[in-house]
Length: 297
Image (cartoon, rainbow, N blue to C red; front, side, top):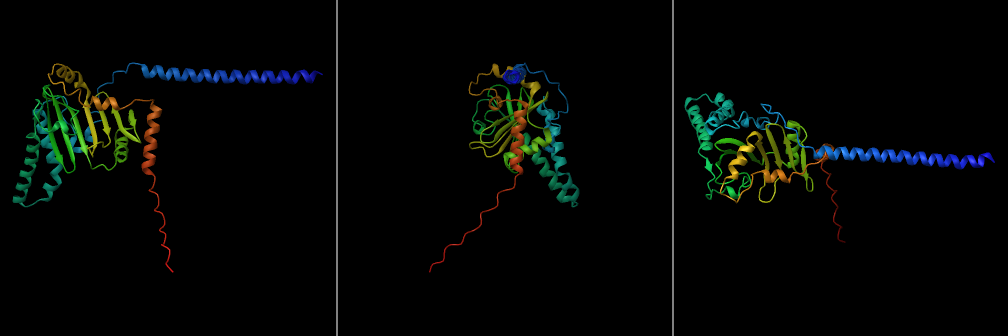
């Protein structure tokens, strides 16, 4: 008799314990989600300005080392000439003939002059840049201009505002696929802070106190991978100059690009990047074996 009443009681106690346990688990999960949401809504903390920045473009390309961000074109010129000389130093050492050395030096000077003479100030004129890779990176009649360096299949654009260097845009076809570029940038700068996916990762963003680096895959008529380094300490100054500009055709440069980069949880970004890099490392599928055509009788 006693066992008849004992068994239902045990079952009831066990059911209540399981329900209570599930309730605790659900409550804990709810708290975790709420904490994550609250963290995402927090105002971003001001990041310290570290110089040289871990995101310095010189890590990506030695030619872009020690660029004078926040300084004038006059400050930019000697750095440009030094980078051109460093790039050609091995060839100069290997050239012993004095006439050939003079010719090589003239070519180097011409390279540096070509960059400096490429200066274009955006005053509303038809410069061709409105349909270029930097079409969304400048605003006319806002004290902005650009210097350009062409090297093989890559182009570098040095954008100035108020006479000071504030942005670098690189359009490169030398990095292979966007997955190859993302793998290299992740090795150089760590995993990106934010990514955007559309049939794979199409944009990624890194940021510290000095730079916001955005990488974008080829799109539309642009067949190159695009890299943008924005010098963040100058953004308020650029915004102020643009607010008084009479040109209404352009917004805040690559902010249009940045706004397209959707933020997510850090784990989500890691998962996306890890998945993309794993896909890149997978070997290509073996070709299907050839089948012989049936013999005619």
